[in-house]
Length: 254
Image (cartoon, rainbow, N blue to C red):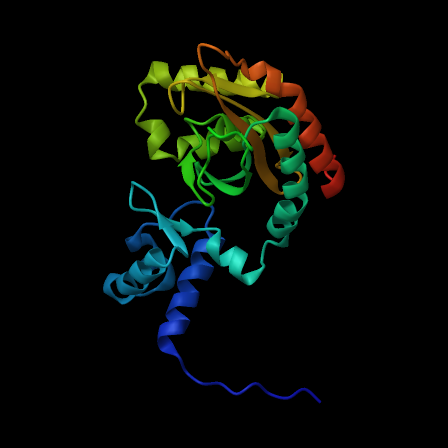
């Protein structure tokens, strides 16, 4: 016989859970007024709760004022065990990638129109580049971000871009140039840049997963280039592709 679970009213927690559930069910960010209307509550009823959730990084607010879930809730609740598995599998492969190239490397995933650094391995060089673990960067201005976007279905990718204020603020010619660049990356299966993130740095990335796998991720290398040692992103292509293949095999991704 099933034992009935006692019911103790906790209005504040109820309200917070309602907000999180509503955001998880929405395909796009919700403004405060839209969220209040959806929950049939007044704006001032949920404003303070949203503020707390944003402060604790359970929800994120975009530049247009829309709220969406962050990855924090999923990580804490293990609602995305694939992320934990991805990090677990990635670390040995990233260590080997760093050892063979002599450079720092990292793994990132797409969240909205940002990439989040989930794992990294630093090179053993005395002078090296280090990307902040948990750091967030625009998907439009990073090799990893553009790589992940290029790996999405065109319709899904365009819908994501069209809903992003950062993309809409670009001049028409800059939007066209960015789309052409992403389409080129999609054909090549490789993303690279020179002097983009920092002057004197080359970046290279390849994708892991994709829409069908439920994983939108990329591995990348950022290397210093100097007068005495010129670096070309293409020299990292094969090591990155081998690392990506290892990860796909271990994760069971086609």
